[in-house]
Length: 195
Image (tube, rainbow, N blue to C red; front, top):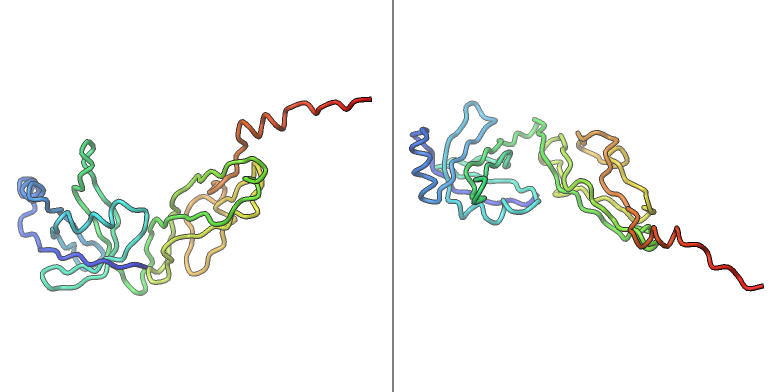
């Protein structure tokens, strides 16, 4: 899993007024959970730009006033109008404690149903998984090569090792849907042969 470093400063004052002052200075209030007690800190908004607006999952190396923590981003809060990052919750990584996290899905291959006139539709962009953080992959790769028209790969069809997928097993992850052109071709009358 890719890593990034964030240098943070511990927060002493936690009120709404202090939070507004931080945000006005382009600083993001953050909390690290999973240790003996929550650690409140802030970091420059610019440190988050490359990692927030991407489906990838990163391991964060938090340097809070010289003290190091391994963590991952668990929850992000954005302004509803400006889309500005307002708050980040991190969860500390423990070697033997399982975590729940959303991993991105990547569809791999050229589905045979596309050759028949269908269109590949990704129904889920991420899957919720549970496992030891160091055992988790960067993404879940699903081979769609054998998928025909009107066929789906469901969550229960995905085989993984080292972690568990938490989504309902009957949910389709990817489907080859029938396009209008393909439907019209299937319903068109066959040309009559001359006698």
